[in-house]
Length: 442
Image 1: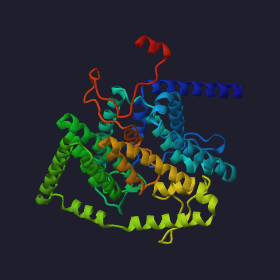
Image 2: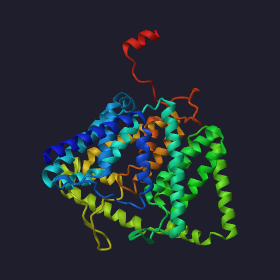
Image 3: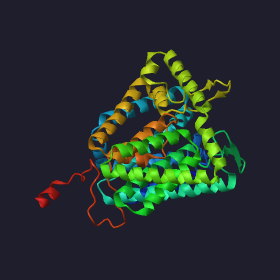
Image 4: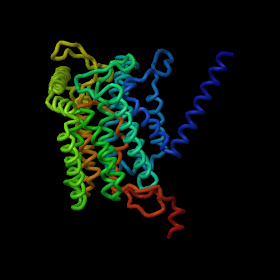
């Protein structure tokens, strides 16, 4: 009887999962809402608890979502194949290296250790591939992304405002007691601040395209919160994105971007002159001058790289198995096990030089394409994400913006009225037609 009930329960869960897959294929907004909510609560819930532990193996919400994202990507193979058509070999090579490192880890270190360490890469890859599997030639999808960027940007702004009002505006070295959780005193965690900065870039682009004041106001509001969040790596990444957007845009776009910068500069000057934000300005200055965090990270990178090299040429070429760990004694004498805050170092440690070179070629290929087409939106988003990766490990929060930069989206519909013609993404075409459909057209 118990076995029968467990079987019925399993079939019911599989039925619900299949229904979820069907719904998300029809309405991709469901995935965006779920993943957006997870992004919004990252400050309050930095690490989610397992939702089930069958046989002693922990299963998390993001594990289930990753499987769902991969399945939908496979079902949308036509659009996915088109989005990655010029880089299929590199994607395949990275997939093989990842599967090999995971299999070696499961075989030698056990599934728990290997899968737990690989989760960051799995979630990042599955979310990005899902975003690439959308029909970017449709104004419906670009309209959804426009709404997502603005919705998430304003929600993150509200979250940051709430944190500032309740806990105050803290700096890089300050922590607060958030209902028993020792959390950073900054109003947003780094991933949230980065997402907000990317939302500002998209909002800036839509304002340049439409001249609607709401998008300009959104751009300035999002950028102000990014500044107050006091993540220096995010400051550098987003500042570089703004510069790239201005440099590689058409003349009128450069002028409009410069206008935004001037307006922002005058606003800051007025605030400084009024003296109402002297305390905040002191914190911003301290955050910009504090190099202790970066020094500790570079020391860890060098230590882990040297350790990998000492293990021999196989580890250098193909990386160590997932589950090996990142244990090290830092310069301050403290023993830590977390991943290095550098996605490129993380790729080298687990996928080796071959994986690192393949990743570099993949990113460079998309960047060269965007430079050739002078797609300043895609260039600016990609540069920001590349620079952010220098200071942080695998982060999936901005997968949509990564897809926008890879696909080469140029225009977003300015309103919900998608009946009018809107230019397609730079490299998007309609999906392949059946022979009968082509015959009817002819």
